[in-house]
Image (cartoon, one colour):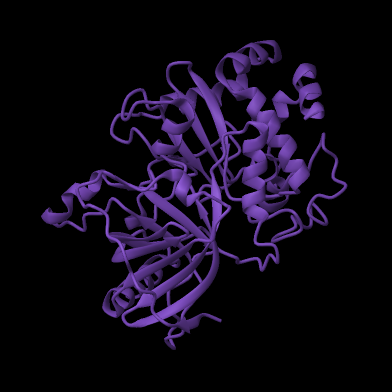
Amino acid sequence: PIEQTEPIDTVTEPDPSDTNIESFDRLFNDDVMKTLTIEITKESFEALNDVMYDYHQQFGNFRTDIYARANLVYEDHLGTVFIEDIGFRTRGNTSRVALMNQDGSLNLSHFKISFKEDFELESLKPLKHRTVFELEEIDMKYNRNHDSTYLTEKFSLDLMREIGVHAAHATLARVFVRIGSANYFYGIYTLFEPIDKNFIQRRYNKQEDRDEGDLYKVLWQQFGPATLENNYESRAIGIKDESINYRPSYDLKTNKKSSDHSDLKTFIHNINTLSNSAFETYIKMNFDVDRFLKYLAVNVVLGNPDDYRAMGNNYFLYHEPISNMWTLIPYDYDHGMGQGWDGSPVFSNWTVGANIYTWGNLNSYLVGREVKHPLSDRILQIPTYLAQYEAY
């Protein structure tokens, strides 16, 4: 249950003229305890909840991306920082629920906070360029699977990064929500570095808005699994518009005004249609195979059934325009390590004992037809890459 607690005193306020407030390393320092308190008026909290119910009535889900205006109090061993005028909303794909039930009781929810919302106010326009902890947003997830260690996602992403895969940083923090004068303890949350243009700039040393490249968030959505097969519907590649509940499987997150999606369409076409020898040449020149093989190997260790290879789900694709190389970036690791969904009936006991060569095909089971995963299927048919996968 969500507990009501005593208010936390706020201390320091950053200079509002600063474009960045506090360092990335301060937030993701796992050696210290961190506390985040979201302060929101009762009226704003209830208004956001009403918006979510209205959206549910129209579309059958609570997945509106409208932000409520709030403040953030951050506390750690160095002191307290007060951030005014953040955007606050829930997040989640199949897991999203309303903030409150009809009886007024509070729901545990995944949250997203944004530091760049201006709420259509001229006085807040400068916030469009603000970052905090060198981030534009923070993704926050509660312990939905009742993981006694609280570490499944963090450990998974840390392991990915340790082996050399481009994966998000994650850390743990206590989270409170102060609604009016009432302060509620929501529990221990995992905080994530969002996979966005700042993520890309940190990994690829990109200059802002220069040679950014197309970044796609790839999920099983309205158009079925995102397997990279060549038989996708035309609207499966696009730009999400939650106002009409349009959610493409391949959702472009950068270059929204300039990209025509031709680079992704070409990549999908080639990995499906090239002959074996031509595919081997093409994939070596156009895809970061080494990181992908590491990703596949780590997923076997983690026992995660909800990834590209089994589900056509939960990853990002980034196209680096100078090298013309595509990279797969892992995302969403709340299943695995004996936590969450075990992948039944195709897998049992979170993939323990599963054949690492054939693997399980949840897509074929769930959609009732043969579904291929050309990226993993074809890469692992190449002896050199298969041996590399085995070594990892």
